[in-house]
Amino acid sequence: MHEQDLSRLAQQIKQWGRELGFAAVGIADGELSAAEAGLQAWLDRGFHGEMDYMAAHGVKRSRPAELVPGTVRIISARLDYFPPAAADPHAVLADADAAYVSRYALGRDYHKVLRNRLQSLAEKISAQIGEHRFRVFTDSAPVLEVALASKSGLGWRGKHTLLLNRQHGSWFFLGEIYTDLPLPVDAPATGHCGSCQACIDVCPTQAIIAPYTLDARRCISYLTIELKGSIPLDLRPLLGNRIYGCDDCQLACPWNRFAQTAALPDFGVRNGLDSAQLVDLFAWSETDFNERLAGSPIRRIGHARWLRNIAVALGNAPPSPEIQAALGARLPHPSELVREHVAWALQRQHAAQ
Image (cartoon, rainbow, N blue to C red; front, top):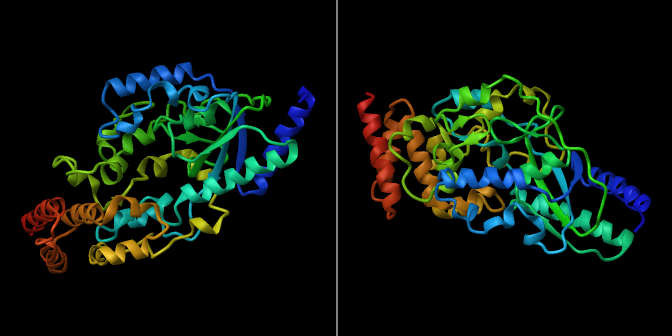
């Protein structure tokens, strides 16, 4: 294709992206040497914890053409997810008897939603120009999505390490299409955090150890989602009522005053998870968990870790006979992981009386 044709195609791709529900689409090349050095330094310090997949693919994460041979451009897309009708997150966090679930997980699993739309976008390109080599990614392979999105002009990496955009804050998902089409690239975004460090100051576990540096081993999202074993004793009280993920750094970010709510119904609240009571969720059987959370990203942690997380939150709640009875009913649970956290929670409840 001629340069002029490629330029027209790039504009068409962005238009198609908007029609598919994306807030924005950008295009970047695959040169990520600076990001590669930063990733390696982060891995060397062990900040990835048990997320072995972060190191498992060598340099393929930072060298797109090695992950997908023939790749010369990456099409990055941004999709808003904040549910428009969700309960006020600050109010939920302030209610120690309520369960806080990260806003991204209140609706349908974003992997499927995002992947389907990216696939449709790639197929629209094929319909326009004929076959081209591409591969779609939605947090499903070794991809440095924030670095690529920043290069493509969709935003900049904030001090909390998430992508930020002046018109959309950070309440959005990112996805990519690796392609062999030599499309014109967009100008990278510039940073606008300035001297602000609200995200660093507000982090309950001080997991953001320096601007742009996250020790995942202390991050509540890691502890409640990625960590398979026991939550460290010294961090349990700091989790408060957060049972799946954490949004504190985003809630504190001034740029999220301009965030947009989700345009897609897929991210609407399901099962009342935006403000459910801890005791009610703790009573879910494994069948309840699997059936009610079908199609939810939460389901992947499994029922035992779900109970582990809620037990910690119940241990952090004000003492009450109802909570203690709920915890006592779970003491004989077949999972040692659950029993351990339930016993800890009961001890906390009794000590606070």
